[in-house]
Length: 236
Image (cartoon, rainbow, N blue to C red; front, side, top):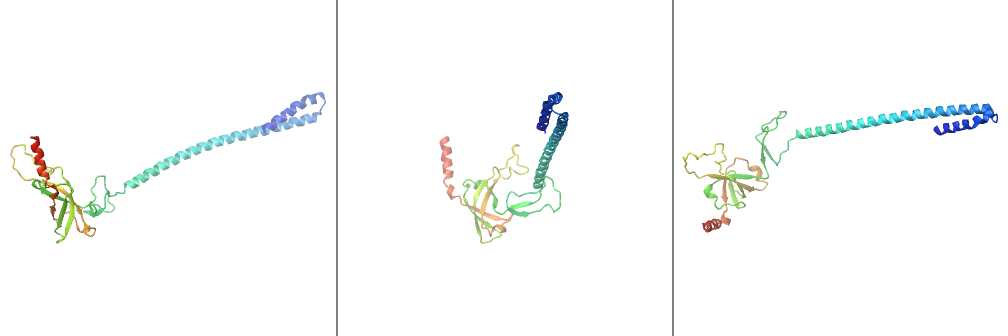
């Protein structure tokens, strides 16, 4: 439209001196002037349309940016909702059987609330309290024979897994205090953890609190005490 208007104005400028001198008829010059005005009007209308379109594009761009911002906010809300939903699902760290259930369906609980006792079914162990006088030859990894009162005639196998870092009395609610000088020597007991190598058909029959008898094979450490005595003697 602008090119058409420019061409029309050029035609008017060219014919104007010709019409003034009488070389061209005045009607032709008037027609060219009319065409030039119409071309200018069309060019102005096209420019106005372009300006309006550019404004609409700017408005649409703002709307797009607003929609993108709203989409980001919605995604953030969705992520937060997923996190909150996942936080309502408690997953046990181990496989086991539920015992001593302390919660009911529909009950509201707070963080730290005790819900139940979970008894492991794979990593079964026994906590045996041995006298301190029995620990001299006992080592981690030694084989253990286990007699369960509930399974007469059945001998299970296990191994020494770990020793407690202190006696049972030392970690009690009221540990003994011998600072007053009133001391009576009592043989202390040390908790020893025994890992049970029980077959799958036996595992469901073993529950916490059962009475068992433990026999540890300490033959592999028979020479340890003598080596300890010799090491101590050399340092004197």
